[in-house]
Image 1: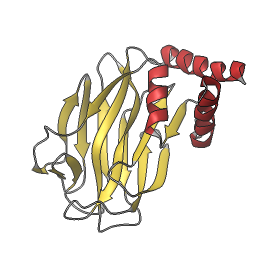
Image 2: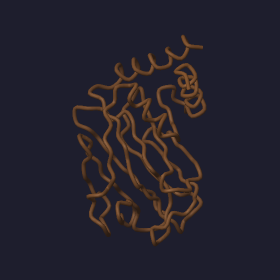
Image 3: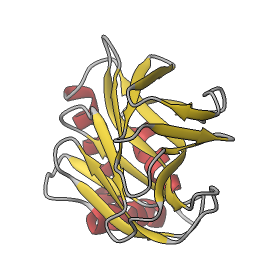
Length: 203
């Protein structure tokens, strides 16, 4: 595939996924997400929850991924099994709050889905909500189901998973990825402007 058509494909996907704020994009395709994260100068850090203790965890459990400090909360507490991070009670929302002192989290994504009491993946409608009210709603069917958010404006500070139609299931995360830059705003906007501009000259 030529670079012209590749960039056109990325831009088309973004226009389909863009939300009300012109400075924030949503991509259910991890390849597109990774390309955009790199284009705005982000350094990526991945949390696999592999070192998170297995079993029950109290709400407010905190850890770090590279320079990103994060905490997870859910009514009734949390539960982790073999790297799958979930709520202890079914039907409850799972929220991650995060920050990177001296840096700015401009992108966040991950594998978001629903599980039953035995951590089997069950197809379910999953709502992923950012702190600014931006939401993504989709039927997530696999452990590899992905969605990523990229902001070229304000930093992202939290993400919440909920299952509006499945009170007997548990919102679950297998992996989270963070895109971090040393300063917000100008770097991100310049990066995305160059990315989109390249497509226009090639059309």
